Image (cartoon, rainbow, N blue to C red; front, side, top):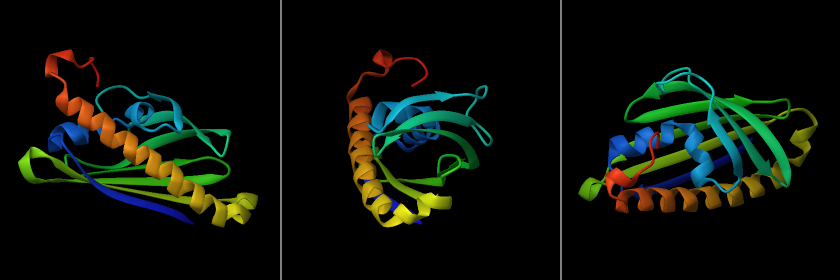
Length: 157
């Protein structure tokens, strides 16, 4: 099983940060490994909401359909996705930090299935690189959102 964990403090308020990240289609904005993302269930975001993402991992396009399986606003959201070669569980936890900022803990567990399990040691290294790029992108995206006047943000974001 490959595991990635990262903690960071972002300059956006708790409710804003939770809303942005629990709408997992936002991953296309902050994760350079995600080339397509959309919400496929009706509004509002909540338990059972589903998101279709296409990620590029080791130069291969990987479609993943994520579903929110735990939803505890504004403290925690857990999403799972599964295809024939991997099962992914992403847990994002939130807490208030100093000066109105938010502490975010992002954990990803990837269980390789079938023949793909043979590549697990290399997969773990690649996951750390991909995860670090996504974490940097997330910090930039939320820092940018925090500096924008609220009226200039696009609807739905």
